[in-house]
Length: 319
Image (spheres, rainbow, N blue to C red):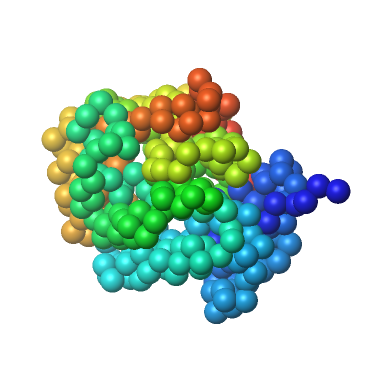
């Protein structure tokens, strides 16, 4: 009888954890252990709260997937210390338990924001000199540095992966993508047509494919950017949203100066459009995924950028 792979997922009931666990249950002979604040619905075989983390049989684990963390607050109301408490200190705790155990595989979900907040080159590579500017990015980078300085890539019989995903999307996704969807659904024309940008995304199907390979194959430890193959412009994204709703896209080319002025006004009175959200919607942020593809020995991700995005957008209909 084939031994099942024991996989611990922290932040188990979040957006990524819920999608990833459902995928792994179908594709891998595994026992899934959930670690989260409280138990939710899902396909997990057992559950532990953070208060019971010491009760987990760490020596019996084959893989630890550390998803738990505090997401970036676009309203900038979260204290910086909270990011470090969750994104850095919690990661240290999980990694220390992994290091002291017989578990073989550690996968930490960091962020491209741990490297930089703006891509100055054609595409962001793993070799960039890290200079995160936000509390979120700095807390993620501090966690990376702890892992690396504590033998992260030097274990003789363990594999450690630091993944820096582009913006992840899929069923259950929340954030700016949902805001765009609601704008189009309400029939509001998209006013940012003059902002010609490209941005990388990470579809949940491709993400799950990567994790499965990291668990099952002998892949070299290290830092890996993960993203879909083709970056998408916001105008393309608006067109896909309209298509998913059976509509024609309404894209207006209002002057950039006027839009930026409105965003600054939004900073003051807390409108849905503020300077930070405008930057996220219109800046270039292209992520180079060639390193992970080379490690997996593939030429392209299994799901195209547009197909994966369209699938996500169709899932919003039931929200």
